[in-house]
Image 1 (tube, helix red, strand yellow):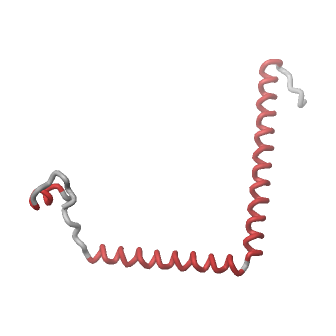
Image 2 (spheres, helix red, strand yellow):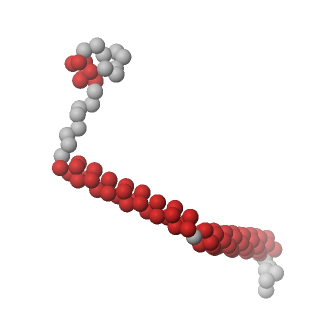
Image 3 (cartoon, rainbow, N blue to C red):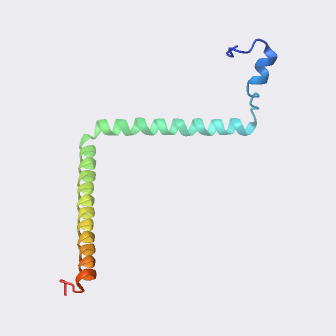
Length: 102
């Protein structure tokens, strides 16, 4: 037994969780999960093979995402800069009463 403080089978059965009943639905769920796992493993194998055979496509994809990430970061930084300018303009209008954009 795997219990250190249990000395009889009856004590172990009282401590252990009850056995799980295997139903038709359990078997169907297991088959469905196994099928999905096999499909996922085959997809991973196919993608690895494709990457091995077409390294230029992988490089193009990485370059695309690097350029897109840089562009998004640039746009986000510009948006933050414009927001900070608008906030400072609002603060200036609130304190002085005049806008320097007019």
